[in-house]
Image (cartoon, rainbow, N blue to C red; front, side, top):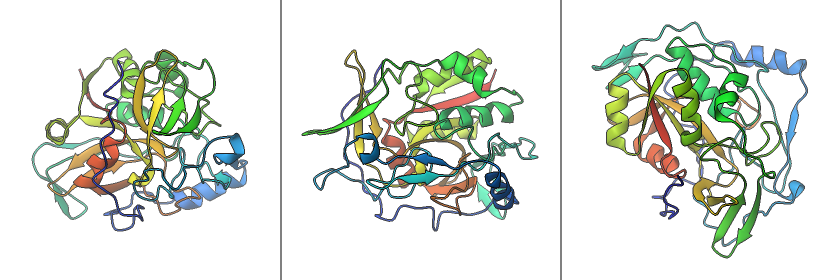
Length: 317
């Protein structure tokens, strides 16, 4: 079912909404060198900006929350075509053994209320596969190996037409299939391609995981504190966003963002921050993007709220 379509005003993000100042540690040893070597043998894919594919460019009156200028997969470049570098053509997992701290745990010199060491997936399968990449990381951490094709098999596609956007008097509307029941768009070429937790949960349940919806700080803390991992929709780099509505052929409406939609995993927290695992990693839009970083709670809640707090807590049965 679609979530509440009323889009509450954001509490406000800084205009410069990159990761500067958020990074507490980096776990991407060798990633840049290896990624550069792989890029040498793989063509760079071009992501077209809104005007290049006939889409509206947000006007001066658009309710822009933060700049939204940073980005990676899922982030466009306004009226300028952006070249998006795929760091790896296939995922590479780190040599990490999952360990969960359900009492205060110290990691890299900092004590967190809860922290689950999570598999590192260095790079996405394709430009717009982040929902599947995060599912892969979470499943792998709990000892279940899968593939993109297997995950897509559970989620499916709903593409009555390629998603497109229009700027209306009440704001930007993206038209496409039902993202609440399947994946909509092209995995490689459409900046609006996405799905929601209500669809991706079928993949988790298909591999016999326990899945719970989550929509508040209190339930996030309780879940992470119990050793669960969180799949969630947010924005690239937790950057600013343009509140947008997604409308399906049957009239269902979902809250989303214009262009810089993204999916990450939350793996721990303390009173000040949420710890994020992000498979996107370094790209030409942010060569310093680590695979793990901290986000202040207010910013986490604001950017997560852009999707109507679309999130799942995952744990093995």
